[in-house]
Length: 226
Image 1 (cartoon, rainbow, N blue to C red):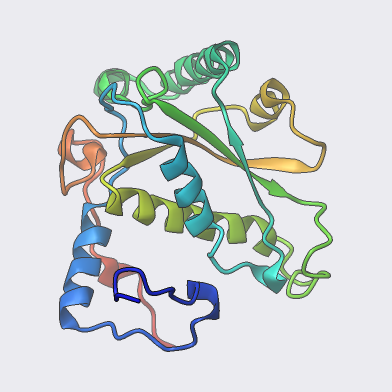
Image 2: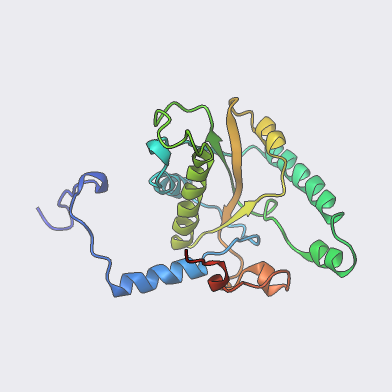
């Protein structure tokens, strides 16, 4: 049997630790630096198999008590998408009222979602009633359940970028309204509504920084020693 056809152990059963050398670490840093909250997408379709692969990678993230509380909803129905967009536009208009003067003009000029352009809409929920994990690690910090979903989202973001895809996290939405639009089970709490697709442009700097809304702060100001 040739090397090309030799059967390999599946990753989850291969106990040989990989080597992460200096070149890998440099490339990992590039991946982290180039991961962006994307709002401008090309019209190109994204292969559904790739979306499933990315969800599978996200599900390898750690979770409290190994509870795996993430629940993914692929939103393909045009009617449901339209209702999500409608909710975003209402919430965005309301948010604009919180600003005045030049800040209001700046806010109105920002592109804060790619909902109309992104080929993939993916809603990610936390199953707050899951019995998986048997409650380990959640008695004193029950918020660890949704935090676990956020960890999976970070994994999904990096994995998407590694495949040349961009991902945008739309937070200007009413979570309960979105849950109703998507008709999910009771006890599922919306953590993220995501737009995924191939980006129109590539930038290493965040869009909000590039457009003068908020510069990146020096992380040393956020580190304490005790």
